[in-house]
Image (cartoon, rainbow, N blue to C red; front, side, top):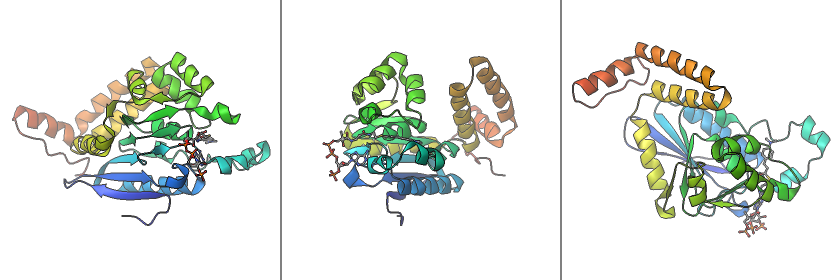
Length: 265
Ligand code: DAK
C-alpha cells in the first residue's frame, strides 16, 4: 500500500513478475484529475516502470467513476494568459506516455473529458458494463486538451468521434466496444478480476518483446503505414538477437513452457 493522497497503489500476483494496480482516489469529486493527482500518478507510473519485479500496470478508478475529467474548479481559475504562461496542466499529464510496460485501463462508471483521454493514453481499455465514455468539454465552452480530438477519432472513426465531441453525449460500454474504443466489456463486479487476469497473462511474456510490440503499435498511430511496416520489419529482425526469442522458440519445439529472462543476462 502507498502513502499517496489522490491515488492508491498495490501490487498483485505471486509469479516472478507482478502487476501494479493504481487506483485513482478522489471519490468526492468523481476522481476529477487535479494537479496533485497527476503529480502522484506520474511518480507512481514511472516508479513501477523502473521496477523489474513489475510486468504490467493496471489503472482504475471507482465503481462510480474512472475519472469525470480534469478538475473543473482548477480549470475555472485560468485565463488565456495564465494558461499559456503556466503551460496549463500540461506539465504532468503525459508521464503515462513514457511508460514502456503495458498499461491497461480498467474503466467503470464515468470516463469523461480528461478521464476518457487518460484511458485512451493507456495501451488498451477493459470496460465494466457500467462504463460511460464521453468528451463533454463543449458543454463548458472549451475544447478537449489532452488528445480527445486526436485519439478518439483514431479509435472510433471520424463520424462517431464528431458525434461524441460535438453533442457531448455519453457512449455506454456496449457502444464503446462496438466502435473499437474498448477491447472488451465485462460485468462490473468482475472488472478487476478480469483485468488482473489479462495483466497476469502479459506478465508471463518476454518484457523486451512486450515493450517493442507496444512501441510499434503506438508508432502505427503516429506515422504512415510504410514507415510503420519498415520499423516493424527492422524490430522483427532485431528480436532474433535476444535470449527470449531463442528461449520462446526452443520451448515450443521441445513442448515445454518458456522461461523468459526479460532481457536480463
Ligand atoms: N471536476 C471537479 N469536480 C467534479 C467533476 C470535475 N470534472 N465532475 C464531478 N465533480 C464533482 C461534482 O462537482 C460533485 O461534487 P459536490 O457537488 O458533491 O461537491 C461530485 O463530483 C459528484 O458529481 P455530481 O453531483 O455532478 O454527480 P452526478 O452523478 O449527478 O453527475 C457527472 C455525474 C459526471 C455526469 C457530472 O458530475 C458531470 O457532468 N461532471 C463534469 C464532467 C465534465 O464536464 N468533464 C470534463 C471536464 S473538462 C488539458 C488536458 C485535459 C483537459 C484540459 C486540458 N491540457 C493538458 C491542457 C481536460 C478537460 C476536462 O476534462
